[in-house]
Image (cartoon, rainbow, N blue to C red; front, side, top):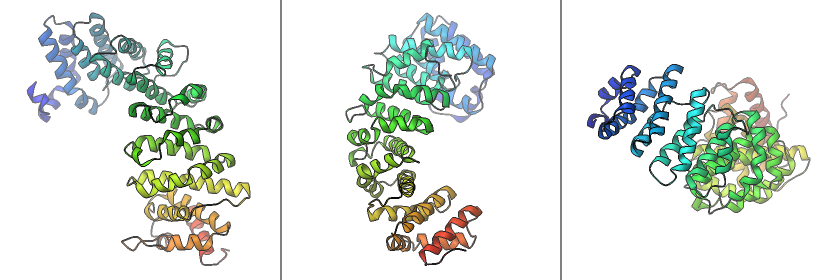
Length: 399
């Protein structure tokens, strides 16, 4: 056991096969010796991750494992043993089979009953893992419990519910049904909401925004201003990168092909987003925030109006073109955004942004040249867009 605790690779590898795990499970479940039972579950917990990395279990093995954990829960021999059993099981049990679904529902009931001891954290982790692939059915007992947990006073249960519902929204049908939860989610969008709950809640809202038909409801719920009032863009929230990231993706999705939403975001969040771009060292976060402005600029073109932008917007687009030069999507979006800005009369501003060099001497203008020369392997469509944009920069019309 000490070798497992110390992470001895040879021991972990030797024990992490089902031929070794199965008899250990049987003994852990059926022994009457509490000390031995605790030791066995600790061993199983230690090898669980290593075993999972070697491949999943068969349906028969999953059924056997679920049966063992169920018996462990029903017998209530030892709280620590139950917690270890759940931590072991979370490596393998996923929704989809009847056994897994029944066990997940049982563990959810256990989490409610033991909300104030060591079982609950393990139970909640198990629920989040095992609910992946568990189809959403509003009337089912498990899903009714998750919906109740949204308003629980228990922080862990609330976070768990939001995570589980967020996983469910990966299915379009479920996402379409779950948008009806929005009125009940909005009161939780406040700065005082615990960090773990914010992370889970914003992940759920982000996933809801992926479905095109959900976006109008999110905009009409004033999600733009609610996120702003929540303070997600403030410097002291930078430590919550996952929260800011989910908020950014949500705003980006809402702005796409929506003139009203884009104008609202431009008016309410332009300075906050630009300030965040300057502060963050997270390149992926910086790119996603910049893509918000691409969607806003596209909406401006459809509106046939001229909106007011800070000069830092063109700088952000040029920076995305330069730093994201290996990613065709980022290059294409940056070029489209910059092209539309030029067509709206911002040529000098865009040209200055593109010519600005970083410490290594790289610039967006130089990246454009390398793409046109075929040095980056970009698709023909991207190269054509780049050629059009470059022609506008130097005053030529592409023929």
